[in-house]
Length: 171
Image 1 (cartoon, rainbow, N blue to C red):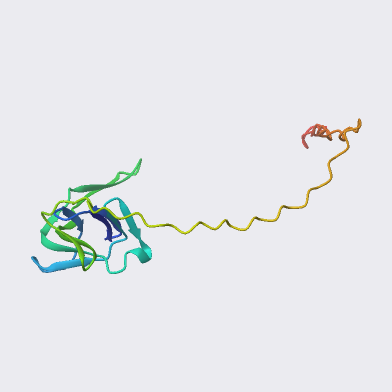
Image 2 (image 1 turned 60 degrees about the vertical axis):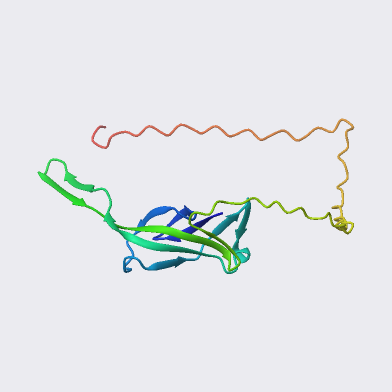
């Protein structure tokens, strides 16, 4: 089972036991953080929107760190202006503890996905009702084929060349 969560304006695909880096969160180390998933896939079946119900993703804050340095360079040619500045964004490191679709269906860290081995008895299905047929649009009468020709396409009128201008200084 895995889930897609949204944090820091980005989406992350997570499952129990993953360690992820997200945008900085002001939370005490070791505390638990809950996320509401956007999507949960359980045994190949996706759950989205109303299908999520009480789904949640629980993560523990492991620590904080800085991301790689980004260099910002401002330069204006031919004016002698050049500025260089560096920046390291703070990141929060989280460990995903559990992905829960509902309180009774939970996958915790260390558990492997178990395929469903239960065999269900085939239930009799009610005969499917056919949808009502749509009414056909009224047909237009067919054009006569007895030698009637289509009107000829209009030809684009040729543009006249612009009149030559004489310079005002010359006579």
